[in-house]
Image (cartoon, rainbow, N blue to C red):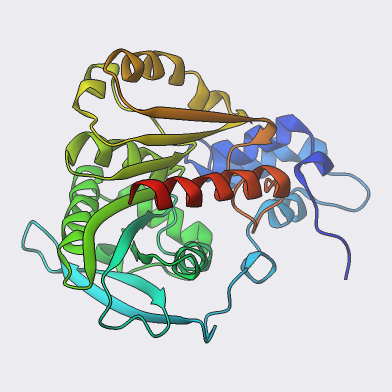
Length: 296
């Protein structure tokens, strides 16, 4: 099997184009047109897109049937009365009847894909009850195709989806197998949700955003939870707005720890794509688990 590609195997301009494609700033045709100049040595623009796209099997760390875990598909009510939101719940095996600290896992802009389910299983192995809702439930759920998932995500009502995650936090915290302490971790879109939940939930125990869009600095004073923020080193789209919000959080006296990982790309924790940085991801994850164990 050939070695996995890394960010260093791609031109930085191409990585920026891919980021724009992933986040809706560029459609597929636009990416392929602009990426054509990077096609070489038999690698077409379509081949470059495929190489940059997720490989869930390669990134899986915890098997779906890992005997150390108990997992299930569950649902909770959407707050607008339109139905229920589906999600994936993971706990340590044999923990039935025990109250566990809970972590809400918020996905990127593709819904509850296999990578996010794997994140939930990793948290469960560290002794947490982890719940990952699928924000795409109203559109039929994660479709099994990343392009279709992004297209569905872009059409959804963002305010409603955020309220569904707020409802997920309340539902998870109130479960009779929860200790009542709740943390949240989110990635990209989910990192933005982790920021928003810190604003909206005064009893949140901990918030860990990975490279998420930041709220308005004026909202920083509403944050009561301790925060651990992870930023990529090369991520102008996110990092440009961070200093003003960081200053506002510090001015508000928020318990804040920030780590920026030099040389890393947006999405560096996602081990299904070449943007993954193994050393930075391990450090960020170890810091996150330690933070949750100290706060949740």
